[in-house]
Image (cartoon, rainbow over all chains, first blue to last red; front, side):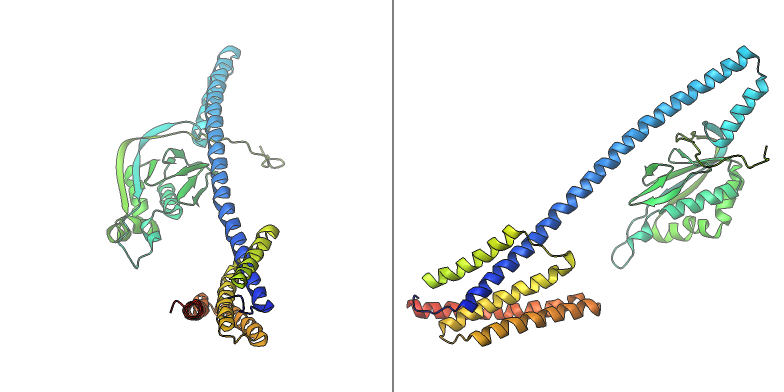
Length: 242
Length: 117
């Protein structure tokens, strides 16, 4: 063995091999430590922000209740006409700030079963667009108040996709989705079934993909009030407007 | 035995150098590094084999290593460009086959040398 003349060139390539292995190792280990750390820290941020949001919403609800009491008291003591106070309540109700009840429908949308290979799993899931289409159809049918999984849909409510969940207002909602709407039950159901796109969910998609999709007419539906904040920053009365 | 140790020492030196400088490449180039590692292993075993056969030539060795590596990199590059990412497997399989053949040869040559055959 002593006499085998290993050449400098061979030694050099051995060195290069070692270098390459080290570079590959550096790169993969950097990747490995970068990914999960970032994801988990982002998840922590989301959770803490959601906790904060829930706290603030609770406080907002308390303060709104307090405000209502004070306004009623003020109306009583200062003799401001009762009609003004009633008008305020009516405006709040129309804006969606208070819980309301009345006849309407309950629509349940749920993910279907994945039937196996060669199919797109996305076809078997309820998406934000499905919910938005049904919500639109219900408003077309004259819905006066509407909530998705307890999130009141108001004028500024977004309905959009957020990963595996659907974002309504600032809450992430998960399958199944229960949409409650107050209005003429017959007209609401007909509005969905007569909408070209929305009706597909309850006919073809339901039977072909096993999606959960049901409309129930109800004599009494409770819709919760909007819990988020309403603090317009940019809008103002147009000049000369009332 | 001493010269074999020198080779391992060179390998360790390379690894140490890479780890200490902590050089890394963009993720997109990881396939190139992988193929280059295979090319280097192939060249190293081929070099050891040639040395044991007293047939080692600097020119052939260095030019072989460089052209093999360049060709492998070119195959990976073309695969990326034409949308057949798996084309790099051609280089991996080719180097893999050569590596095991060289390994077998080196093993037999060492047996001969140490008189175990």
